[in-house]
Length: 308
Image (cartoon, rainbow, N blue to C red; front, top):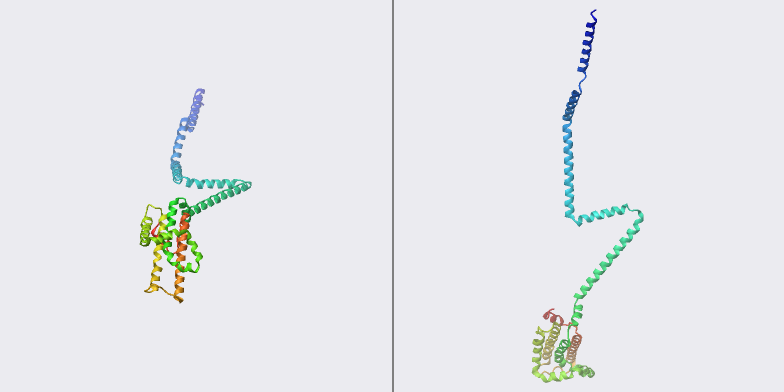
């Protein structure tokens, strides 16, 4: 065995060897941190593609969301009330569905009130349309024009019918012979009958004076010109029975003296005079009242020559 000193030295060397081996086996703090960082980098490199993919997806999602918001905003601007109204109605409908069943009577009452209001508005619109149509009708126009005619205009429109009536008196001889009492109907115009008979050839001047001074006078209202036009046309129409009478009277102008020929002449004369008398009377009376009436056979022709 060796000396105690050598023993102690061998023991110390063995202890140092064991401590060194243990130190070499156990890493230091700095080495552990270095290893941890290395392992983190390795792990990061391993999951880097996944992380980048996730970040890309998040960015795309944010961009899509922004694009959707912009699209909805543009739609709202374009649609305006048209887009807001359905959304509002949908929201109200959703609220109505969310409400309890106890609110349904109130909603029904409100719907009935709205329906009643709409019906009243529709009825008012229809009434207004009917009023406008009635205002546009000839009858309504006649009533409106009636207030615009003064006394002189009505008097002229009535007096022009004296022209065909006085010319048609020659067809009244048989009627007054059969019923003398009917001659009393001409009593109010007796002065005009005497004056007309005394004019002779000047009757033609009265005819053309009426046509040129009244019918063709644009300074007068249509009411006066229309009635004068009817009177002139009726006077011209009397030429037809006059020509027929001269044709059947023969050369001497005496006409038939009996039999069927005389009866036919009497009926023809009475018909012409009654038509002329009634037409002139009706036209004069209506003109004096300020109303316009179309006479048979000549009314349409007069209206065509005197348009509104």
